[in-house]
Image (cartoon, rainbow, N blue to C red; front, side, top):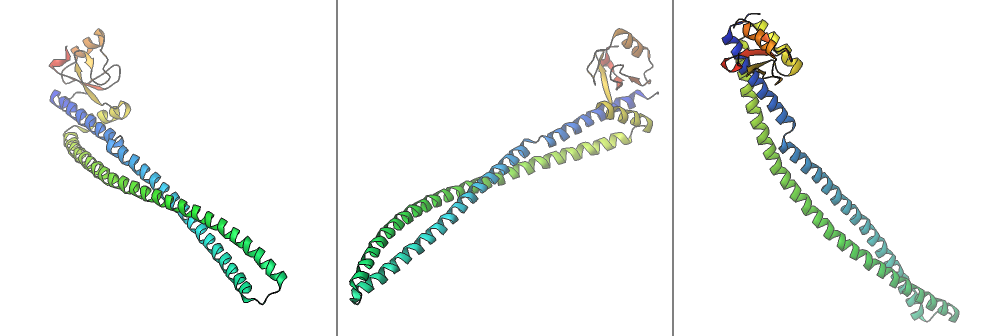
Length: 245
């Protein structure tokens, strides 16, 4: 294929824009701000789970406290009933002895229940402190996540703007190329990632391999408007004064 050297030279700018677009796509895939956001999001989930776990523990302790308080009240009511019966003076001596024994047992039972209740209440107080701390940790990470999200969005907006500019420039360049030349370029770019490159100092700018003397002689003998390809990677080679031929 014969192509005007000036048209061939425009392939270099197209290739440069394509390289820029590839770099933009890579940055989008590996955006540090997105990685940071995802890390903070995972940390937020972890901290929320921790807060929920503490809340569930508090709920269990509240149920235990309620149960123990009910048991203490039941024992007190039984004690009050037995004392009223003793104070009435209307019970037989044998029944009085039984009531006195029962009261002693109830007092011991009440003491044990109250000790257990105090222990559970202390654990509940400690859990409340843990919950307050967990809540503060969640608030902190949510604030950090908001800031990180802003940074991520700003970075994405910059990428979008750069991509739009590069895409518009690519469209402009591609529209000025012959369709058959553009088809060759696109096919090669799809195969190797580089459709065209500068032949500089006898080295292919696409694969970076220095061509042997025979290949250089063949390229040097070709007319200026002759489309030449790299013998190693098959990219279109654009010849300039920097080519060393």
